[in-house]
Length: 350
Ligand code: AMP
Ligand code: MG
Image (cartoon, rainbow, N blue to C red; front, side):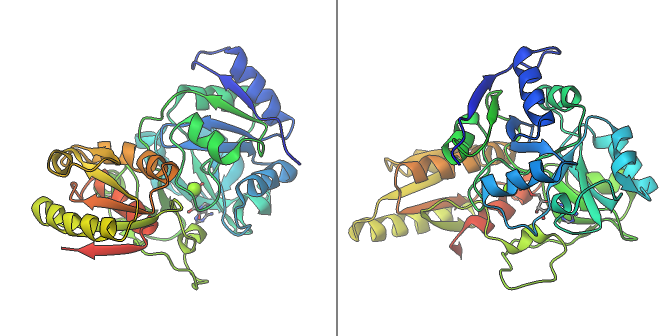
């Protein structure tokens, strides 16, 4: 059934009436998209099975791909997780509120539908005034995956949310553009050595400075056939627009010359080519349909621009999107490469 999706415009203030209204919808089992510092999430009461199943339905998300539960305080975790390791408490003190999701053993109060049937639960406290006020006003833990149709790039503005989910959700709280633009770092805390299941703004090095050894348990490929991936989200196509995405990785000069060849080849075949370029490349490659990833050495700009750039070029009906992979590959750059490699139909290394 088509829903009449309400648009609530909110500042982050305590007692904001639009947030109170959004919280009411959540308490009554509805679905509300809202900004976090990472991307927009699609929220529902994490302890209400019917409400959570509405998230899966709205997104077209596979039922075995579990959701991150958003909390307003560290204390709330004690109600949802058990055997919380000391290292998890240290990470919460250091990085919460912030873009870090911790996987821990779940308590039975958390329904199967929220965890995709796993005995673990993913928990995070977001660092965004609107998100925190909404969680507090609702009085509930809020399950919230990214607020996009399953498989599409994550939304970084309320407009992106509406372009995927208008008519499928009860409301969106518009809080403007998010600050980071990529999803949280996900760390599994249930084993002896914590494992990173998804890279994000908080890096391995930062985690290790807080709790010692941390392992990496993700790679940048999609594993469509695999049943045994640790994080179910790893096996699904992700972050991709409808256009064909080609990523060219390497040093700036080599990337530019390969992109020139690709552009003239595709143009000669009549294709509509869109480019996602660093500012450095943009000065050299004068093609009409471009979107900026920001300065090559500032990967936080690429993080913020990647998903909106893919959406921008997709909307303008690019047949092919060529992504300039010459930006700085460390820090949050690792997470940007992870997402763009997953979105890519072809990766060219030069
Ligand atoms: P999204 O909400 O779209 O950012 O996706 C959440 C990510 O967290 C997905 O990749 C999930 O597979 C992962 N995730 C959520 N809960 C768990 C869990 N209990 N164990 C492992 N991975 C999880
Ligand atoms: Mg997602």
